[in-house]
Image (cartoon, rainbow, N blue to C red; front, side):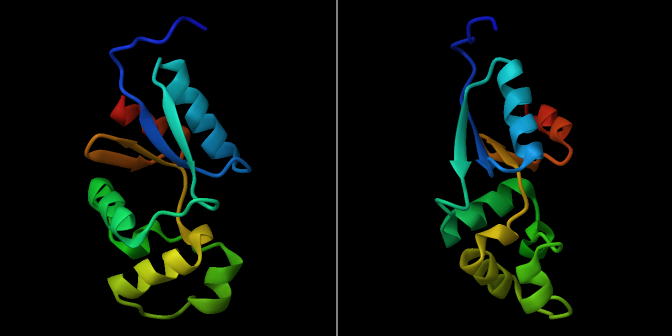
Length: 122
């Protein structure tokens, strides 16, 4: 792999190492010469304000960032109408509900599903 271009900033990736899409996204960003800061959000979940900032950068509402296929969603939240604040609280209580991977560069972010969506930030 060629040496990293020092002029390129580090991109933050909210990441689950067990997720193949997360691993593919991190590899794709690194292949383009960017350093990555991998945030294992299940180990170190974002706080409420950090989550708010992520949603602003993504241009999304809280419900749009919720993983609806997760068991905790199916058992606790499916069919319920919650406010944005309640969805934020749900993601704080159950970080597994946060969609992944999220790639952040400056004041922009994307949910990299598929991983190629990260290219929009590069």
